[in-house]
Image (cartoon, rainbow, N blue to C red; front, side):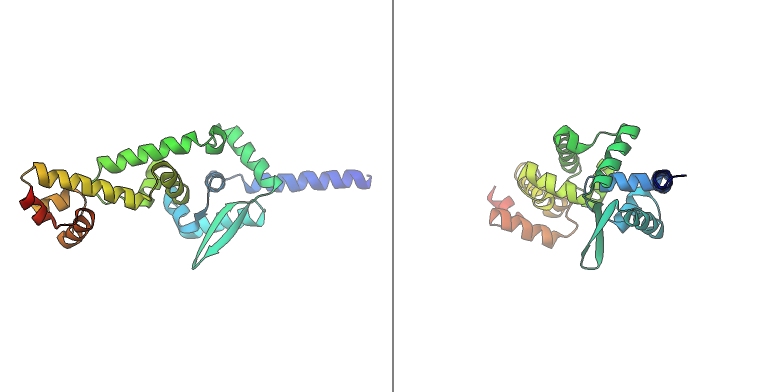
Length: 215
């Protein structure tokens, strides 16, 4: 057998090992998530309902294969799709086979729609403390992408935007209703009357009780 044929066989064997490595549903899900933004191992584990060691194992295999690259930030390590031909080709292949639309292929429309739905959800649950992690799990988008897209859409962070709506809702409750300050605080997601008073005074220049008396 010629050297050329030996090389071809070796290439096919390498390809077989490569695709065998991706022959795991959870690993493909992790890869697909990382195609669309950075994520840390602990959050991937939480999102997919697997253990942290299991997530670390899948990430290690994907990294060894050259499909993802790490970035350390403090004590946390974040992963993303490797910017190489192999990573891009596998990204396209996974989405073609699974028929999952890539947010980037729709001009960002999918992400924008997701952000608007997340925004509406926050307003509907204004009395609750909804975390970014909870939002990302509910709407199937990683926190980094969610935070950036939200700020692009609404001009402020999720926390600042939600806080603004909370204060506006509290002002209406105090002005138009017979609600006590403590009840108004709970109605807009504050479990501490003192924190509510500080936030309200920062927004309107007077304490909630003073505002009620004035109105």
